Image (tube, rainbow, N blue to C red; front, side, top):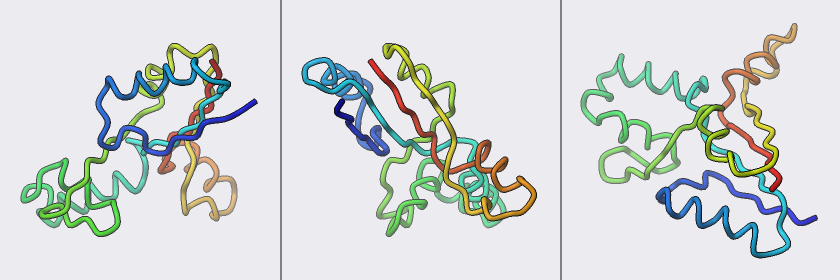
Length: 135
């Protein structure tokens, strides 16, 4: 079994590019897809949004440019890469043509908290939506 891995696959890609890349899985010996996309309901996103509202950055830059500041070196003004966020539901829709898809939320600094709170917050508010799909 060969596995293809994608990270943040939609950065700079349109819908047609996404489906073209999925169709490629049928042409070769690939039968699985692993990808990690930014999670909409993550603590880093909500923190950035709250910080942007409190400091006026959201009003000055707008949502898309404020969101671009999560990338290293981006200031939201002169350098503003496209950043897209996904929910579990939107990822499940993207992977609808696969026979199975396991989707989970991962990536949180709060995992080190005691009493299971860290693991719970990572499962619900982690930075990445990770999907493992099979055709």
